[in-house]
Image (cartoon, rainbow, N blue to C red):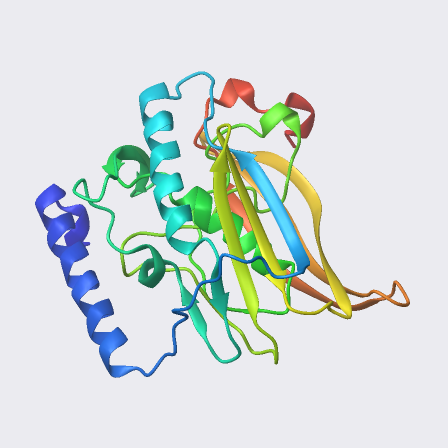
Length: 270
């Protein structure tokens, strides 16, 4: 492909895609959320938190600290945002361009399957956290891009489905969801003590709850590379009866392992 010839060709291709997205944003009538509220909505639909800084073999501590700064800036941009009925959340419409002038630093970015430094790197972590919130709600994902969810070993050996794997890249690789319900939702995101905290809140209680179930999780060697393999399902559960009223496959996972193979749990290799 043209973008794979050399770094200059990659940048040309990237700018082309950015321009195409700007054009689509102009011609398609999408209603984006604009209003924020400092007062938190009463109902917590789902919440999640995770560490901002990873440590271990082959992980650059400078890029990790920079990632924490980047995530804090982006989290502040969306904290308190209200998504009203009919509105579509766009990660990049909300966060904007990640430039040095705006305080963003070089963090880890994934380019052609390889981890490299890039200004604004690490925001996939925030996008992935948002995706977890949305998967545990009635909101409708309208744009989702995936990269490997095996960027680093599972923290403390505990596997959390969708703990990584959501890809964003200004502005053409976006993460979007739409509110097709009849009530307003609120995103709350903030950073504290090197942790990212995120909540999806609502005006009223929901009749269902949502659960992610991963099946047949393991690692498998194909040629000279290892891959994480699993199937992740989304269950919709009626709160009153406790019955699963719907089940849908949300990811047939086949992710290349990008961390040291020696750190793959031996009991999970098949």
